[in-house]
Length: 247
Image 1: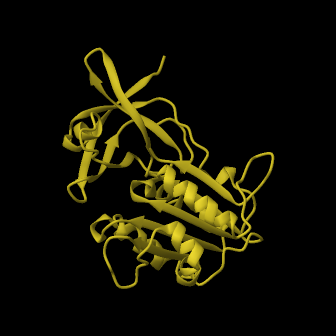
Image 2: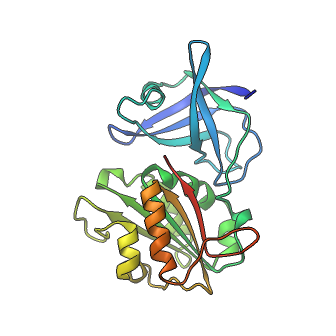
Image 3: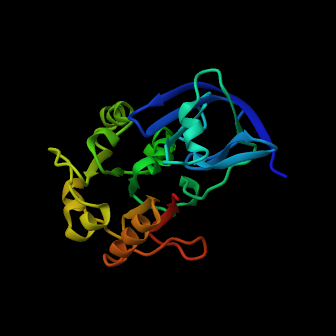
C-alpha cells in the first residue's frame, strides 16, 4: 500500500493561466536529480494522485513541481488553486531513470524537452555533477508561445555561471521570436537547424541525448536522431538516447 507524507505549500507560482510551480515544505525521500514522485490530494476515501518530476535538486530544502493545468483535470485543477499553507501529500517513494547515474560516458549532453517536461532537466542542471562530467550541456526547450518559456532567471543564471559549457535553445512553434527556432524539435533535428543553433553536431562519438516530453515528441525525436546514427540507450546495450514520456 502506498505511503504518503504530508507537506505544506510554500508558494504556488502562476507563470500564466495554465502553468504553475508548486514549492512544498515536506520530508523528501532520498532521490536523484531527474526522478519523479507522486502528488496526491484526498478525494473522499481515496487519494487522487499522479506522477510529477521533481524540479528541485537533492540539496535543496523543499520539493518543487512544474505542472500544467489540464482542462477538466481532476488533480491539476485543484493543485492550481492551492495557496501557501495548504496541505498536499507526496508519495514516500521516488522513481525514474532519467538521471546522470544511468548515462554512459559522453562529453556533450543534449537535453530536449517540451512544456513542463523541462522540470527534470532543471533538477539535473542545478547539481554540480553535470558540470563536472560534461564538456558541453545543450538545453532545448520547445513551447508554443513566448509566455511558456519559464524559469528564465534560473536558466540565464546558469548561462552566466557556465558560459563555456552551457548552450540554451528555445523552439517556439506558434510565434516568431528573434533568436528562437520556429519549428518542432524533431523538425529542427532533421533540418540541421538545431545543430546550427547549438554550434555543434550531434556526433554519436561525443553526444548523449536525454528526451522528455509528450509521446509524439519523444517518438519523433528518436526517429530523427536514429537517422543521424544515434540509438536508444539500454543498460545492457549502451547507446545515445535516454527518454521519459510525459502523459
